[in-house]
Length: 310
Image (cartoon, rainbow, N blue to C red):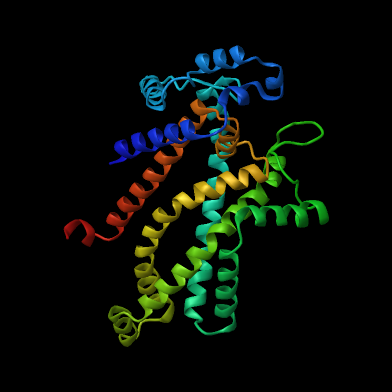
């Protein structure tokens, strides 16, 4: 179903673009649109194909895309493939680090909260999880910039390079990465923590766990070998279902922190009505979400052979 989904998503995007009240020709001219005549605007619409029906624009884009030609970006003034290749690595870096932090923090915190159910640690973790669930990621990002950049001056406010020299270095990129990665991770951690906590609590009441304790196994062996292992199976499914939220959060985080990734380019393409770039990035994001769900299903099947044999 992945191919039909990709086709429908791109077609709907072109349909929404055609219904938009904004003129792509005016966006293309920018501040100089006031000096343009009606003939100039019509000529630009014709040159970029905006005067055609949306389904014709979509079909033209699709037939070129399957050959590897994604067109030229109207906002970046370079081929779409060049825009993606320049920015994709930065997004992969940000999302990978945020994902690792999210998984590590969620598994440890959620499991400890479940094991110490009803204690002060459990109550504190649950309260913070519900609080951060309600915090928009862009607000969290702005609050972090105000506190850690403008007030404490611990980390740079945005970008990836030194503001004075523009040079890239490992230490410089790492210092710029901390806040956007933490903001993106914190926006996802509450959901995973609460899910892990509930899964571990449910697993602790299963018959095989009660039997393991009755056989005299050490508590650490019971927790690691039986409780946590059984609780992680449904957690794999949650990872796949929450993956779209990670992509959406990356768009807001990259825009707020001026991180030069493809997620931020999506916002720029939408504002500029840059349909060649927007179509490519939308397709890429959809493909990543579908791939994430597919990988979650595959990993779940390997982790639980009953899925295959059943």
